[in-house]
Length: 135
Image 1 (cartoon, rainbow, N blue to C red):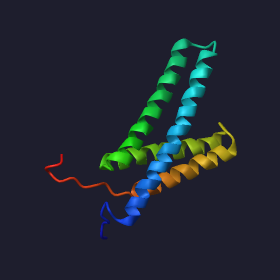
Image 2: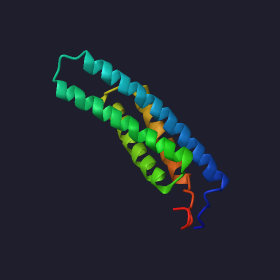
Image 3: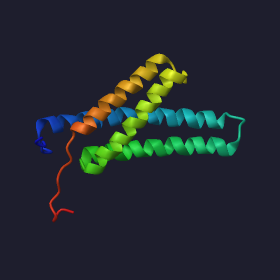
């Protein structure tokens, strides 16, 4: 099977789609982080548990933002791996939303659709090859 180069039109479209999806996911995670902070501040629960929820939401947001920056600027191979992992986890969250009922059904379908689109874009995006002098 012939491989397509990084400057192939399909690969360029996939990188743009991947960047757009990661931007949407970053915005959604920023909203989740805000809701988590507000919920933790208004909670009477264990402060360490509240802090751990905030830290995990912040780390998730940072992970997606770093992947987005890598997709826009570097188009490196690590971006594909990171994006595939993010979208597999997003698929799990969407199916959990549908099966366990931790959210409305439309949210579950939206998360699954976003995950499948991101997974496909990450597979089609080809990393830019760097020569030995550029590393």
